[in-house]
Length: 259
Image (cartoon, rainbow, N blue to C red; front, side):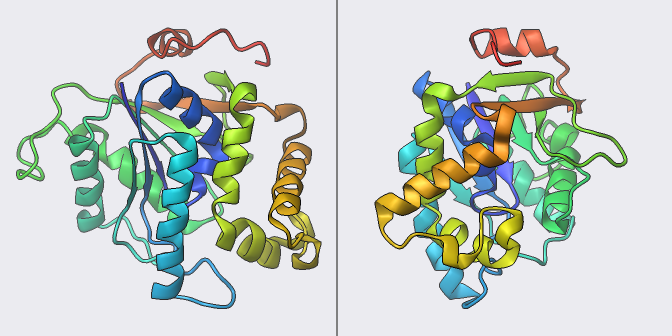
């Protein structure tokens, strides 16, 4: 199957779905990651093209660890995304070009405007990907994809509901490797912007590669707590309707012991 994970920024998909992506790619599915923005605002020391270029190389390294078919970065400026017709057309074209069977993205209630607008853009594509008169240069899909949401902790106006939970224990190391590929984020930007509230302050980050990798692994295990080793998804009301059990069978996933 063709499975497309759509995040607002480089590293969003890895953070929420890296283990699932590795598992599905290993099973023979064609897995695509998409960053709707270029990530150019995601650093405290440098900005613009310099950061965007770093993010491209980091995405390529991440894709290698996860076994992705491709990692797409759309030409929208980080921190300036709006749900415009032009941005919507870019999403529709990509979903058609990848012949997506399943599309996974952020939920619409989220702290970051880029995440919220990415969610809206993807939702707005859920019918239009089949309409021939929209984005006429790319043939429409003949079947609507299944649309899913990544997990989050936001509770208003509605809390995340897990319709599908995937055991990623066997692919945890690949997920951590994909996160570690985003050096500018996990070892530089996120410690600076979030500090002790997330991974730790910049002075907590080890300098040697092995120490950094182990630090990142342990920090994520601690942050996830009882959710370590699993990734969950909510079925969107748009797109093709399916139950969690049928989705599990469709993807040939084993029963989730940790659910």
